[in-house]
Each structure stands twice: as C-alpha cells, then as structure tokens.
Image (tube, rainbow, N blue to C red; front, side, top):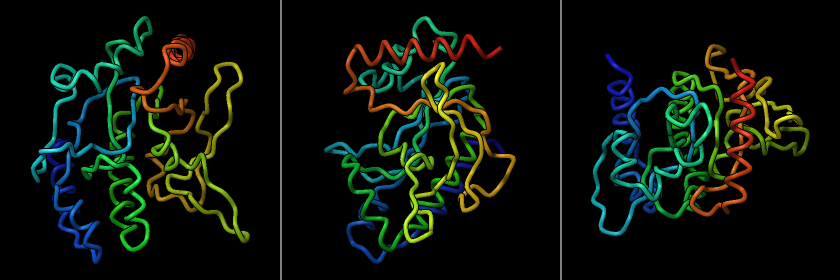
Length: 229
C-alpha cells in the first residue's frame, strides 16, 4: 500500500473523531485536505489548509505540482524563494495539520478538550516529514514553528509546549537552527523518525514577507545547500 493510501486511511479514521465542542466539531466535519506525498530535498512546512468562503465539506488529497499551476499565489512562492539554489526544482510541502480553517487562531479551540486530535495529526505529519527526509526544512509559519519545540519553556519545574520537542543549536555561520536531540517527553515515538542534524529555517508566511527577507532566506538556503554534499 502506498504512502498516500496509508495517509488517506489514517486521516479518514482520525476525522471520525467527535468533539463535545460544537465549534470544534464544525471544523472537523469540513473534512481534511492533505498534500500527496512528494520527495524533495527542501521541505516547506505550513500550519493547515484554509476553508475559503464557498467551500464545501469534503476530504481530499492534492498534487503539489498541480497546485503550483492552480493556486500560484500560495504555491508558486516556494519555488521562487529557491531560485538559484540547488533546491529550485527539488522541493516539497506539507501542513502540520489537515483540518480546514482559514482563521489560524482557531487552533486554540482544540487545546482545551481535543488535544489528542491535534497530537495524532502531528504524529502523522512528522512520519511524513521523516519519509520525505529533506536536507533542509523551511517552516514558513510562526504558529507552525511552535510545534517543533523551539518555544518550549519550564514552569513549576516542568517543561511545557514540547510537542515534537526538538533540541536545537544555533548555527552562527548560516544563521539557522540545527536539530541535535529531542526532549524525553516528545510525542515522536520512533527514534528512527528523529531528524538529527537537519537544519531548519523558521520564517513568517511567505505571502507577507518583504523582498529583503526573501533575499536573505534565499542566501541562507543557497549557503547551507552548497555546504551539504
């Protein structure tokens, strides 16, 4: 069974979940949207697919290459950011979550009573990230960055906001973070899935990024790419 079929099956089961919150349940009933599996040495990671006005409740997977043509405002920007780098034609994309909602603040609705629904999507997404096995990851959403462990903190002698729970070191030569370990309370279950030594760039959403920021990121990606043989 192919990866896309496995992903479809897992999401179909997961989205049978019933929430006690009417607002959360309404989001779940919209269905899921997930990118079809695509290998790429550079991987862009977003937060979740939107639910534009006029959308209908349905679940589906989509082809990234076709999305570049059909939805250039969003997907064309990824390739443009990599122009002149070794990854220009060798990139992929994935969202951490597959529920459909335009207002990204509404993820907070899940945190009170539906946290496991969120965790199971994160586990699935991480397994796909590991299967893609990128040379470099570009997390192009500040909310998505939160789930990598970069913002974990200690409160009352206990770590919180762990999620993937990665431990990072900052590479001063290239100006990005490198995964070096994971927290003991990480939701990542298999050591084989841990992305040790993978460089990660944490950025804002590309659509709202200035041309100066895009130029800087292009320079960083080119430099780190040239250093990886």
